[in-house]
Structure formats: C-alpha cells, structure tokens
Picture 1 (cartoon, one colour):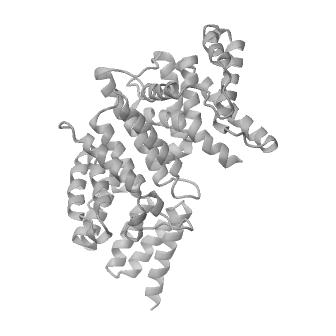
Picture 2: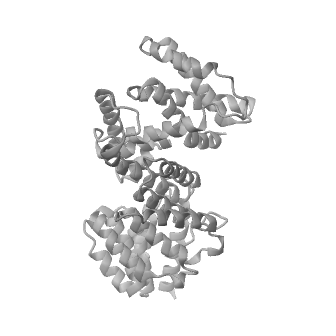
Picture 3: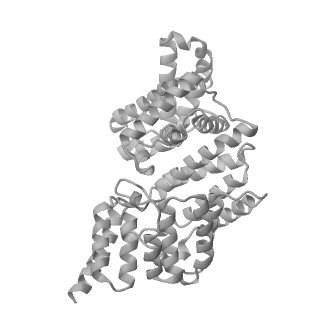
Length: 419
C-alpha cells in the first residue's frame, strides 16, 4: 500500500501542487504542498480498509481539491480565490476513471511551476532543489545526495527559496524572450538531475527507479513540444534521456544485480526509444548552439549505435569527453573521462588520468572512484591494490545491487591473492 502511494506521490503530487499554486498564488506554495500531502496521508489511512480506488490518481486529485476548497473557505485571505475553486468543484463531477483537471491545464501549470522555481531571483543552487521538491516529490535527503551535500543544507536552501518567492512576489508564468533563456537552464538542470536519480538511485534497495526516468522524459517532452521550450538544448537533453532510458531494461539482471555495459543484452535495448532519441538529437543540431547536453547525448548515441561492446567507438567518445570537460570541469566528469581513457589507451593511462583529476578530494567519498581504480588495477593483475580499492568502494556504496557487484569483484581479487 505504501509503495502504491509513493508511486502516486511521484506522479501526481507535482501536478496537484502546480495547479493549486496557480489558484492560491505561488506565495502560498507551502499551503499547496500541505494540502496535497494531507491527501496522500488520507490515502494511507483509508485505502487499507476500503481498498485502492479504481482510479487512485483521480481520487488523490479529488481529495486535494476538496481540501483546497476547505482552506479557501476557512481563510479570509483567500476569499477572492473561492470563485475559481468553486468553479472547479461544481463542474460536472468526474467519473471514477476520469481526470479531475483537463490535461492541457495540468501541462501548462507544470511548465509554469518549472519556470517559477527557476526564477533568477531565487539563488541558483536553490532553484533545482525547489523544483525537485515541489514538482518531482524528492525528499531533502535525495536532493542532498544529488548535490553531494547534507540534508540540512538543502532544507535551508528550500526555506530561503520559498521566502524569496513570497517577498519578491514572483509570478507564476512561462516567461518570454530573454527572460525565458535565463530560466531555461535551471529547468533543464532539474530534469537532468531527476533522470539521473532514476537511472542510478542514490538511496534505497533498487539501483534503477524507472518511474523517475519516465517522469523526466515526460516533462522534457512536454517542454520540447511547447513553443517556449522548442530549443536545441532542450532537444539535446531529451535525446540524452531517451538514449539512456532505452538501456534501462538491461542494466540489472532478473535478480536486480548490476550489469556492466559489456554484459548487457543489446537486443533488449528499446529500439523505438532510440529512434525517438535520434529524432530529437537531429533537432538539437539546428543552429550553432553546442551545450554539455549535446556532448553527453553524442556519447550516449555512440553507445546506442555500437552493435556490441567491442564495436564501441571509444576514440570518438573520448573526443566528446575532451569537449565536455571544457564545459564541465567537475571531478565526476573527469573520472568518467578517465574510464574512457583506459578503454582507449589501457589501464595505466586510466590510472594516470585519475591521478591528474583536479579537486580529486571531492571524490573521496564517491564509491565509483575506488571502483574504477579497482578495475584498472585488476586489469594490470595488481590484485592486492585492486582488492583494497574494491573494499573501500564497498564501504561507500549504499545500493544493494552495487554492493553485491563490488563484493564479487573483491572476492575475485582475494581468490587470486590466495592462488
């Protein structure tokens, strides 16, 4: 039951918060969130006794709407909002399997919320956190992990962001012209992080949270279809998501254990999704704009185009990573590049590339650093050094499938030492 509600929270909460924010005014964002949260609490309290409704999404939206009306009638400050809520309430009651709000209305509200969260008056580090929290149902813990920072830091950012929205009376709208471009980057970063959290979860028992990837793809597609978002970098990000999303079914085995790229069954990759990705990749090539999303999509396209692991054009991927490093000098990008260097020039070159990473200390608690070092040392038959790295990586990994994979790699090294 709790899993069903969590699933609905991911899918429906952002829609309802966006719609209620339009009605209440974005300065009352906390109230909109509270109303939707209360609806989900009621679902947890009543569904175990009365069963899951035929259309649980409509049930949650209906209860949220009723709660909103209660608040409006109780609070004088919302007297001018009552007419709009009543109009929604007294509109012909939807059938059990019918949507509560028109689909286009929900689409527009979610786009407005995306751009409102990414208003330039809101601190850049808080924009994405706010959008992930309100639109995507992320917890402060999940957002903290995505930004490699603490839950307390994220909570403070969210509080300050909402305060700024109230004080500045930020409008709930899709901007135009230069203002659109200023906010679009924050919206894209939000969608990018949402997809990444689904592609490789930061917490929990499952490596992949496919519903988050699907939601990121859906929102990016929504943005790309709108005149405000029909831009090359939007298409590039959507292409990247589609290329990586096509490989999701093969990233774990039936038991949920991690499968490396070389171990994946490429015949099970989603070819229609790859084709859709290629379409948007072509759309992203319009004009002279090149962003990190273009380069990452190019890397993903190389993987999707290779008939098997051995046929992968690693030199082209390395060239794209060299360009990407000019856009994003983060140590994570540098580590990914080092892995590609090892595929092109061998494990010694991979170790040298890791040693050359700037600000490498930021990766000290990043389990993939030690996993990569372990793989390089294992390829060089340095079993003792490899085992030490895998052991450290295992200590830092938090997802069960990653822990299982690292345990196997560690045991293999220890067996070689004993042989």
